[in-house]
Structures are given as C-alpha cells and as structure tokens.
Amino acid sequence: MLTTVSTLKTPPEPAERHRLTVVGGLAALSLDAMASVAYGPEAIVLVLALAGGAGLGFTLPVTIAIALLLAVLTLSYRQVIAAFPDGGGAYGVSRAYLGRRTSLVAAASLIVDYVLNVAVSVAAGVAALTSAFPSLLPHTLWLCLGVLALVTAVNLRGIANSARAFIAPTFIYVASIVLVILFGLFRSEPAAAVPTAQVEALQTVGVLLLLKAFANGCAALTGVEAIANAVPSFREPGVRRAQRAEVVLGALLAVMLIGIAVLIEKFEINPVEGVTVLSQVTTAALGGGFGYYLVQFATVVLLALAANTSFGGLPVLAQLLAQHNNLPHVFALRAERQVHRYGIWFLTITSAILLVVANGQMNVLVPLFAIGVFVGFTLSQIGMVRHWWRGRPDGWKWRAALNGFGAVLTGVAAIVVTATKFTEGGWLIVVALPLLVWAMQRVHRAYRHIGSQLELGRTPPPPRPRASLVIVPVGTVSRLTRDAITAALSLSDRVEAVHVTHPDDEATTQKFLDAWDRWDPGVPLVRLHDERRRIGDPLIAHLREIKGSQVVVLIAEVEPTHVWQRILQNQRGAVLASAVRRNTNAVVCRFRFRI
Image 1: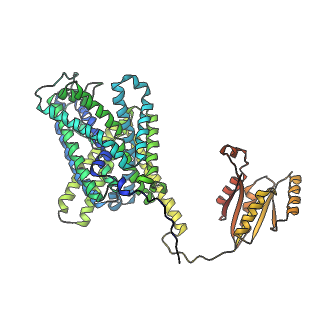
Image 2: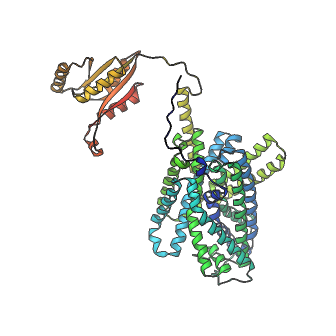
Image 3: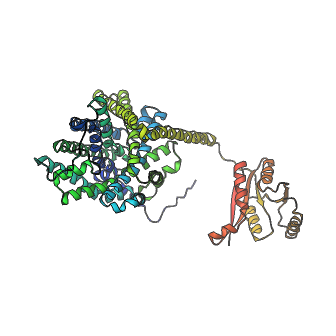
C-alpha cells in the first residue's frame, strides 16, 4: 500500500529554541517564590507582634524553621524531577504511588493554587503601585486586568519568550534584596529613621502562636513546586536543567528569607500600618535615597510578574490531566512556540473572574492563598516515601526519612493554615477542592464511556462496504436543489428526496409537486406529513424505518456573502442537522451553496 504524506514547505522552528535554560527557568517559573520575600516575613511578624517584643524575638527561629522546610522541599522536588521527567510534580507522584483519586486531590490543589497565585500576585503588585501613587487607587481593578492581559500576551508568545522578558526584572529584584541584606548586616545602626508603632502584648508566646506564625510564613514557599511541574518546558537535558534551577531557587529563597529575618531582629522592626516590613528593612539598610526606591520599584514589578509562575506550571499540568482523561482533551493541544494556549486562556479567565469578584483587593484574596499548595506538598512527600520504599535503591532509608519528615511538617502547616484561615475565606478552598475532584472524575467517566463505545484498545474487524442511501430534504425546486441532488448522486446510486408537508399548506405543496413533476430529476420523492408543523421529527421517524443501509442526510444550505446576511436565513438546515445528529446514526453532510 502506498501512503502519501503532505509536509509544510516552510520547516517548523526547532522546539528546543522555545524551551527553557536554567536562568530562563528561574525567570519564568520562580517569580512566585522570589516575590514571596516581600510578604512572607511580614506574615510572620504580624502574628508574632500579638505577643509584643517577646514574640518578635522569635522571628528568626520561625524563619529558620521555614528555611529548613524549604530545604526539605527543594531536595524532595529535585528527586521528583528525576523520577517524573514528564512533569506534574505532586500530581505525578500521587498518581504513581497513591492512586488516581488521591492524585486528583493533588491536581485540584495545584490548580487552585495556580489560579490564586495569579490573582494575588497581580493584586499585590497593583497594591504596591497604588500605595506609591494614590491617585491611581480608583482604577485598581482596571490596572489589575491590564497587568493580567500583559502577562497573558507575553506567555502566548511562548514560555521561552516570557522567560527572556522577565530575566532582567528578576535579576534586579534579587540583586537589590541581597544588597539590602549586605548593607544591613554591616550597619551598626539604621541608615535612616524607621517608622515605629506601639506594640502591645495581647498574647503570650505559646505553641499555638508559633505554629500560626510558622503557617503564615509558609506562604513564602508557594511556587517551589512549579519547576517540578514544568520539566518538559526545559531544554535537553531537561531533568538536569530543572534540578539545577530547583536548587538555585531554594538557595536564593533561603538566603533572602533568613537575611531579612536577621535584619528584622537587628533593627527591631515592628508592623506599622501602611508601611510594609520590607520597606522598613530597606529604609534601615539603605536609607531613603535611590537604593530604597530601586528596591520598592523592583518589588512592585516582580509582584506583578510573579503570576508568570502559574502560566509556566498550570498549562503543563493541564496537559497531563488531559492526557490522562481527567480534563477535556483540548488542554493537551499545543500551538506554535510550545504554547499550551487553552491552559493559558483558562488561567487568564478564571483569574480575571477572581479579580473582578474581589474588586482587585489583595486582602480579600490572601486568606484563600497557600492552603491548596500545602495539600500538594504533603501528598508529594508521602508519595516519594512510597517511591523509596518500593524501589529501595542505595541510601533509600535516609531519603524516605527526609520525605517523611517533610510530609509531617507540610501536613501540620496545611492543617494550621486551613484552621486559622477557615473563617477568613479558607472555607471556599475547602469546598472548591472536592468540587474540582468531582468534576475531573465526571470527565474521566465520560471519556471511559466514550472509549468503551469506540472499542479503543481493540483491533476492529476489516471494514466492509455497505449499501448507502442518500436522503436530500427539499423544499423548493431551484438551482440549490439541483446541485444538492447532483452531489448526492455522486455519493451513491440510491438517492431519495424528502419533502415535509403541514396542515393548511395545500396550495404551496401542490405548487411544489407540479414544479417537481415538470423538472423530473430522476430520483424518487417521499412526502412526509406532520400535523404539528414540526421540521425534524417527521424526518427522524422516516430515517428510523430504513434498515440495512448506511444513511447519509445531505442538507443543502445557502452560504451568504456577508456574515450579517446569516440573520436573513430561516435556519432550517441547522435545525435538521441538530435533530438528525441527536436522534439517529445517520451521517450528516452540510452542502454549502456559496452566493
């Protein structure tokens, strides 16, 4: 048998060109984690301030505990990248070792976290901008939607292009934070006066307070898993590049978090309304000059662009879910430049809805943040324990112990974060996760049913020709009718014209019959009568009476010159086609007569 293959005359661009390097991976996939330095330490301070100066003295120990958890997660996700080079992170691990339903919980938690990350990052960036320029405050929502549109447009050009666009802002931000830490460490006193506020001890320092501070500070860990979710986006060798990017991210984030915490204690930073903790630390380290505004501007830009982490991670995750029949298959399609266009549009639309509902207010969205990601963290750690237990390679015991310890820490964090933020909107996440899981299960069942009907996975018997009958619904004798019957005769020797009549149409019917007799096209005419003036039902009943033939219904329609002229049509063709598809196994052929 000779098979011909048609190829494009212009060769496609190399796929590797549109994949990520280590630096590009950091710029495209780590902005969420990097930007968390702006609000992670502040989240810790806000809780510890409830215990006054004694509570604030625990800022560094709590931050070190978070950094230790970060180290555990970094090592764990480095192992996840090697074990699951197709990406998926917590979803891939859970699917392999914890079962399909548990993997859907992990996937749902990641989807929720990715969508919220976009909304929170955009709102946080705009909030920082409106703080510097209060005149923009009435336009908060439109600014949020504008930033979201900008990030979407960049990502639609390809993840490598987005990475190149964000390398410079990422470098400036990291360099400015490191500069703050270095200058602050070498100063014996603040470079400029730091805003202060009276801190009253409303609580004593206890385990619950420290756990709440730890859980709040763990918001700084969101985004750590994004690199493991998007391994296929890296250039070859993808696993090695992704692992290096994960380690560099963990190291940079730990240095920045601990450095900021040291300066908070050194300069006795207290929470002040209207002034961020990072702003106070920057003032103490650099003063109020150019360096201060550079850090603030870099923070504004990176917070706004931190949404890019989700644009790099969620489309790849959605592709995997679609390949496993848990999401509509359209999410598995990729356009030019390795773009998962439908995943990007899903993320944009859902994030825009959140921003509109919250009116662009960051404080409305923050209580919902970081709950889902810890569920994914915990499931990933548990899955990796089972991974080491089953394979038992050299050194598996200490690796399993490391993952088990991480699972305990992230599990505790998930429980504490959910409990403390439940009444602040966290209940929405508790409701959304099972709803997402239920929806993905329904999609999976639907695909499984379709697969069983199509007998996918089985070798079908050889095809055999069947006698075919082409039915042409007709209403008038015209050039359209002639061309339709001509097309039908080219498909089969058996052609049947069908005309539906209704009460009170005797004159019109007789006029049509006279014209048909004069024309005499050489095909039989079947008259169907319906008392209720229906169009599709009489044809459906007639089709069901036909046995032993493959039936093709050829529906003739006029294709107007201009789009607006479609409103001039009676839509009979669309009604007939829809009725035949829903109620019979006949093949529907839409014959277009172009004006």
